[in-house]
Length: 256
Image (tube, rainbow, N blue to C red; front, top):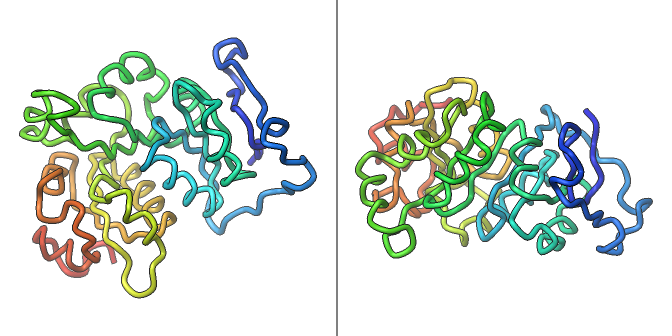
């Protein structure tokens, strides 16, 4: 697999003008020679586009880059992501959301749920057939009254309706940002419920949960994501995988 240097990413099939490329190799002050050649992880290195690079997307991207994956952070102001790129170099770059949607074999949606309808409209065609991991959590004070409808429907299905053709998996939404510092903790890892309708997409998401330093708990189809939505007993609980399985009525040996 070809490795791209740290910098604002231009996808191979994306016109330069669409991404307003800025190379961070110079602006971060990192000499090219100091970056070296990335070491391949034991498994296959995935290209991951992160749409939303804040308190969740930023640290998760760092964990994935540390695990050997190629990460493209994105926001409407990619020049403000230089610190993230520097910290995750040489496996990180930054760009606009369309670049992340184009670049990634896997897309992480780490945005307010109210942004997802527009993301689907603008970039949904770039995500068709791809694994999209949705970690969104609706909140009425931020997302409006529709957040209650999404929670009633289950946010896995609610967000998937805006991402036609994508292989949507719900995961990571039960973690608070403070818990990301507990990745790879000694003893039993924090359990992260995973739900999706595409078996291969669920397998990829479970791998990425593990690569981030948490223990995946495969719950079932996307409709069951409602069982670990905001406000449920397992949400932001810090439960181990065994405790999550017990709370959700799953067999103790599930995923093993």
